[in-house]
Length: 305
Image (cartoon, rainbow, N blue to C red; front, side, top):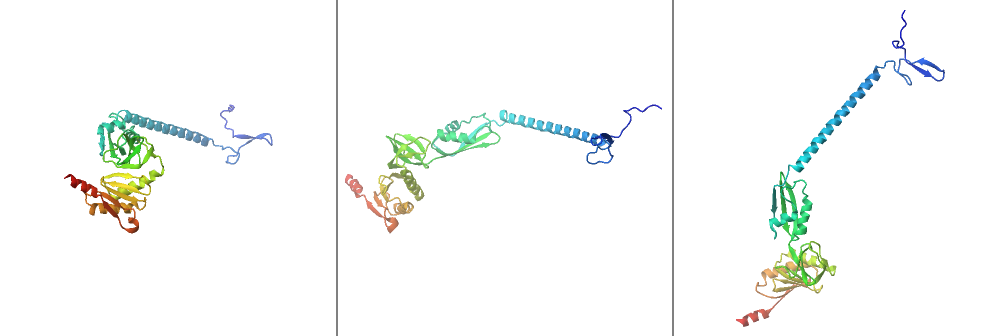
């Protein structure tokens, strides 16, 4: 009888027992420390690991392909597509459209999405200080809209032998050798530091608050054609209206009430040809105002005829 070869013989798996020093067969039942008699489970586990590995490889490949396509689309959009073909300016100001576009730094042919809206707006405000609010907006597929709003002139303040023209928020709009046309001259205060595009710094820091309070009250009252405001005496603020009526506000208190009352008198009781002084210093306490006409003007006019 031919002897069976060792390779063809299926001996049960054995494990070495250190206590007895012998090899003993492993039970067919699964249990702690035992090996399963059927090794087909191991093969299935290996096959499952190979399937998971292939799945991971495919997922990585698809993810890499997606990133590649996305990158190609981004490069294409930044180099070929979305080039600016139209730049529009809306709003009104003293500057021309070409000046505003040039100050923005935006050019036709620039990429729409690489154009910084905030930085362009900041460039415009820096180079064209009379513009208070600037908004730069992208318009698909290839347009830029620049909306501007001019900062109203607050007044002019002495700065050495020149004038600092101020915007409504105290920002310096211009340094000039003379006050701007139809600009309120702010007397009795002077600038310590004035730089175009920056907020003015006064010699006396309290003047900034006083100026803001008076000018805000004037704006609320609706009074126009204010020739000057004299802050020389803090207890006697004087507003020159239409270059003919001096309004004595007294102390800088109850300014809103005093100026509203003054507007009623100026538009309803005092003639548009009259000159003089309107005393509003005690109106908050007495509800009474006093007008002293300047008759010398009428007399001199009559004498000249």
